[in-house]
Image (cartoon, rainbow, N blue to C red; front, top):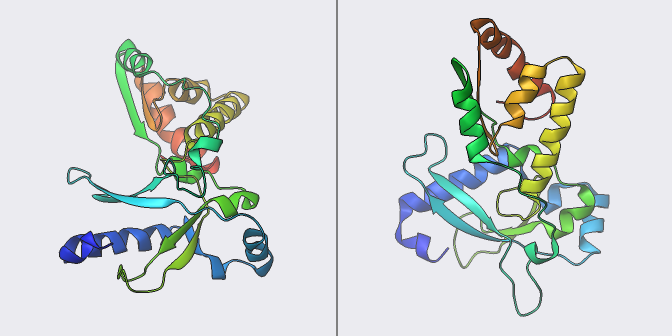
Length: 220
């Protein structure tokens, strides 16, 4: 916060990014939650996650990104990531590239807000809190916010998202959408790159995959 005082433009970018996360429903003020949820949070050990700022000028959508440093510990407590399970890393860039080059027609899609599509269970809210100063003034009182969804930087997020995609793959097969299942099996995190043999298959994917993914909570 202190460093941002020297760069008004960067300060505004960070404020806008935070407001965007709130507008999307990813964060909420603690005092805006139902009373019973507030009581549950306040009756537990409250853990606050530190934030850092990352800049990526080449990004078309998010040049300023608020990152969650769940690996940071303090003298009073361990980090959140030290007590969370990571899960198995089953993604393979090689597999995705092989599938992309396998057939005549390439397919490329990106799952929007991948980690943020997974909502946190309310019983874990007390471990996912954040302090925020609305005007980024070091002297103003901080407001407590609650993270309502998973974010990159929290150790369990990747494994849980992978588990969700595996469930969606099974739903695709139940609905006779094998072509969508194969694309998701070759995905690398949120990047869905694969290939098919015919134009008819391309049209099938264009017609069915956006709606299918949206209905199952992972829009592309």
